Amino acid sequence: MEKLTVLLDVQKIDNELDQLRYRHEHLPERALLVELAEQRAKLDGAAAKTEAQRDTLRTQQRQIENDAGDIEEKAATLDAKLYDGSVTSPKETSALGEEIASLKSQQSEKEDAAIELLMEIEPLDEQLVQAEAARGEMEAKRVELQSALDADAADLDDQIAAAEANRAEAAAKLDEATLINYGKLRITYGPDAVIQFDAGKGGGCPVAMSAVELDRWKHLPAGTLEPCTDCGRLVAKLD
Ligand SMILES: [Zn+2]
Image 1: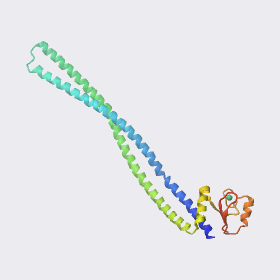
Image 2 (image 1 turned 90 degrees about the vertical axis):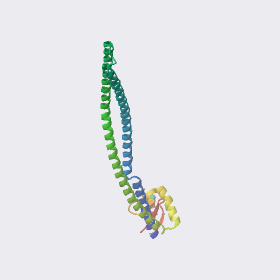
Image 3 (image 1 turned 90 degrees about the horizontal axis):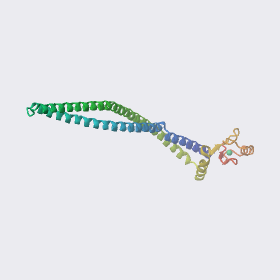
Image 4 (image 1 turned 45 degrees about the vertical axis):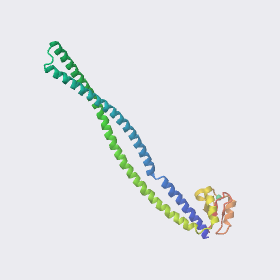
């Protein structure tokens, strides 16, 4: 009789182990971490685009500022020439004056263009600051989730180890042939490979015994362990 209850115990522990392993595999933090990693990848992709755009504009802006500086220098040189007494003819003075005025106008145009670029760069810089802040928040969330996952997984690992120890202890009380037979039936029938006979509930079988099979079992002695001839599951008659 002990063999029957032990076999039912082994099955019960195996079912618990299956549930514990399923829970371990499907801890909600795992899906949340995947989701977070996807959000993070999206953010990084968008930020990289913004950064590339900002850098291009920054390069253009610096180039234009350099150009403005060159023009300013050139105008200053001509301006000095205008007043150092080397130019004496009114015609030449006038031409020089016009050239300086033209350079100053070019310089002013360049400076305006550089300011416009700066105004385009500013919101991109702001976006990048925001992306960095969002990245920080995501990283904090990731650390939090990972630590929750580790804790939950460790808790389940402990429960699994305890159940495995119980299983080994119970299985040691059974003979090899019974365990092998049970193992095969479990592959076919899953969590109820072995059923406890129950006269009131279709024999206790998930597919309810036929009247003939039920009657046969009612007349078998307590302690019988044999297959249900209807479905093939192993039936244990405890009393
Ligand atoms: Zn059956």
